Image (cartoon, rainbow, N blue to C red; front, side, top):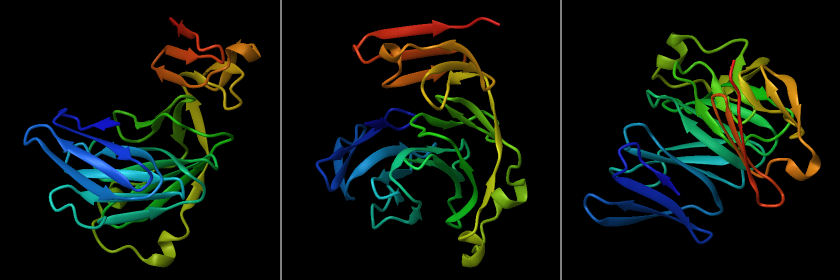
Length: 225
């Protein structure tokens, strides 16, 4: 389940082939057709809904018309997490292959890809929209699309769209190592987690890490620099 930023609308997957969108202000329920939904996210203005599925697709609906998806993005693996930039122009997608794709919505073009060692399930843009926040820390790509590229509203050449650059990145801040065995700071291991205390799942916010372990216990780690 996901809520719009103003909490006036929420959406969730209904069964295996539908999404229910509940408009609390007008007390209206809408149904959108999509099979095997794995993640949902509203745009910052609440006018669009992005839905990732288990086949690696992300479909974006304009909630004003509720017609067929306006934009469709495709990646390998299953979609695990999606996120909008604060201006609503970019969409990030993490898949089960460990890959993170950065899409420009208006042109349906993939601007870059990050290849990580493991899956990412917590995904959002940093406040400056130039890096990605995850449970493994803040991923800062070595290169980022220029303002001209992200502002471009024209039609992207299909050949260019099919060949996005895969860029290296550095990890900043606190998080969980990609193997799930360590807590890290700036990508460096600082606290080892015994097997019975390894996360499934986890939540990382700034210098605080919450882990639910295999015994269904909740553990909190707070770091002070």
